[in-house]
Amino acid sequence: MGARCAPTLRRGSKPRREFPFKRVFLAGSLALALGLSGQLQAATFNVSSTADDGSAGTLRWAIEQANGAGAGSHSITFSVPANSQLLLGSPLPELDNPGATIELDGAGAGGVTISGHNNHRVLFVHSGSWLVRNVNIVQGKAEGGTGGDNSHGGGGGGLGAGGAVFVNQNAHLTIQNVNFTGNNAIGGDGGGATG
Image (tube, rainbow, N blue to C red; front, side, top):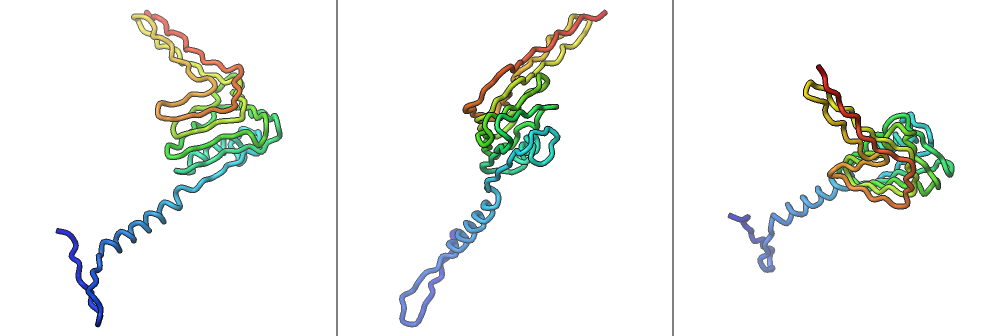
């Protein structure tokens, strides 16, 4: 049964009904608005260093910050000198923020190059919606693993996929004004027969 409305009478006035659900609805709406306002704030993380050590201001640091920024629209920007090259000594952290839309934009520096140094994949988009633009992605490498050995013949080598960029099944990537040069994806060697 619904909420009862009790008439309120004032001397010389017509009866007026108060509906308690209005107060509950307004209080709930206010709580929801206050709760969401702190969660969906945009954040910008600036890459100001070409180092690859994960310290503040590096691309590795900026990706980690964007991954942990929570839901919302976030940006990774660059303020390194024009035509800077970032050489990766190990794979970058996966781009992984399922509740966010994140833009990685090299326009502020002009000619930024991210290099896998012929040893590492440059970007792995694990989750979320990402926009990558105004950068060069070069010398990325993905290599599949070696197949197993057994007495009935060796197993096939693993798939080498996405030397420059790999996009996971439920992730989204948009690319604008990105140059790809010298990236490779190499399948793994087959295994051998034993005994």
